[in-house]
Amino acid sequence: MELKEQTVLITGASRGLGAELARAFAKEGANVVVNFFKSEQKAANIAKEIGQKAIAIKADIRDLKQVQEMVAKAKDLFQTPVTTVVNNALVNFRFDPVAQKSALELNWEGFQTQFDGSIKGSLNAIQACLSDMKENQFGRVINVGTNLFQNPVVAYHEYTTAKAALLGFTRNMAKELGQYGITVNMISGGLLRETDASSVTTDEVFGIIEATTPLQKVTTPAELADTALFFASPWARAVTGQNLVVDGGLVMD
Image 1 (cartoon, one colour):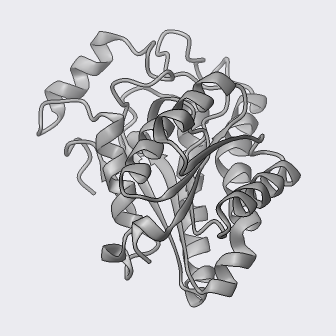
Image 2 (cartoon, rainbow, N blue to C red):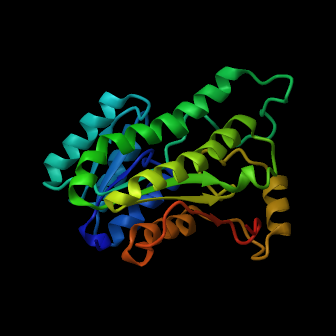
């Protein structure tokens, strides 16, 4: 299915990487569901910027009922089911190397928050769209990971551990859902310059990344969004269960 024929749900699409993902898919002619939980005005602005082929819908990705209602609303508006899910939402985390808790300060609640956002949120989004995907024998799921579990420039324990689990989740879903024409892949950037979550990242950390990356630059949200288009496009029809690292070559896997 061509990108212009797809209806794309992007979780956490009101700002940062999510907003760039929304713009990228809209540029290719896709219908775009701009999901948000707290940033209503920012989501509305993104949808307005895109135009008639976008809608901003509030839903807590950790709540299956809310996600199901969001998907149903989008299907009713666009008169076509959601074909493509981009699991991007980030729950209550900022890349602040100064505020990050040490090993002695960590608590399970922090880990649980990230697991709920990364794994439970992704599961809810897939389940809400799965019946239509199976019926149509087509689906694209793109999970947003990180290169930090391969190269922890900063030990963001809770976030990084949840994203490492997301890779296992991605590959298990790819194994099961491939028989229905559904591909499931992951894209992993590094610390991006700049999103709301990385706005507190120090110049020192960004400097380390630039100095040790072959391209000598920090990856931008727009550059990472381009890769999502590939996984959703016909060019990637035989690709599933993969984790593509998009970080200028910092991690070579």
